[in-house]
Amino acid sequence: MGKRAYNFNAGPAALPLEVLQRAQEEFVDYKGIGMSIMEISHRSGEYEQVNDETQSLLKELMGIPDGYKVLFLQGGASTQFAMIPMNFLKAGQVASYVHTGSWAEKAIEEAKQFGETAIAASSEADKFTRIPALSDIKLAPNSAYLHITSNETIGGAQYPEYPDSGNVPLIGDMSSDILCRPVDVSKFAMIYAGAQKNLGPSGVTVVILREDMLSLVPKNIPTMLSYATHAKNNSLYNTPPAYSVYMVNLVLKWIKENGGAAAMEQRNREKTALIYQAIDNSGGFYRGVVAPEYRSLMNITFRMENEELEKKFVKESEQQGFVGLKGHRSVGGLRASTYNAVPYEACKALAEFMADFQKRNG
Image (tube, rainbow, N blue to C red; front, side):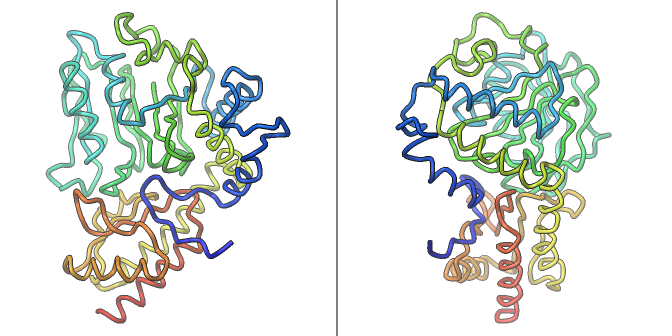
């Protein structure tokens, strides 16, 4: 195998090499059945075992208490933006959202298609360089739920802790930081995450749903867009994204073998410290975008003196084997996505490249 790229893509993103190698070994013949996992029926015993085991692994690794369903859905987190108000926002109620950046805004705009929405708190005035203080969150009367985006992939701001929404169901989009650290799932009525950043490849979206929420689902919504449909059928109502679920299974096993969510957090803090130190010790050559107390463990955003210098940085980094360091097109700048599967060595190499680039261009 040739040298692998230093993959800092924001999603689809890096997968653990060990996972890719195991998938390669099983690609043509899954456990001696003479077929690939992509070829077998989703009604087969082999696939049902993968489906059930993947649910169990996630419950174990996240400490999901009794009374929650784990669902494997399609359409990405973006479809969840619509499904959530479709399932849980009734007439006369208000959907409350904390606005922390690009992905929160997309969720808000989608919810407006289905009913009344309210901004419970916002960091827009600070250009999304922080997360609103929990004390600033004001729930609208008769809120159906409070929605947060736990980590803004584009802006690079992450909740250091989560709000207590009382009797109002708390819903969290954790697409870009699920399992990067331990989470108290019991605080949430629902957690969802597109897999393609920290859990596996694109194609499957994980939903963790408290069972009492199912009683709120109306009968008159499309069958495939009802959480009740998927909960009742163990995510097997229609043909699931079988290979993506299988890959999530392997990634969860890798996380378990490497110490679980607590060990992931320690690794992530050690990895990201290398890059944040390169930014902070640069004398202003590199400038972090987000206030230090809200910096993400998963998406490190930074700027330089001008766009020409940033373009030079990206071009030279690519020549050195780095991938994905250009910031999102909507905000520009630079971004390094340091998901669980990005190895320490890649972050160390990036910090060294940053120091060398500054030496040559500062």
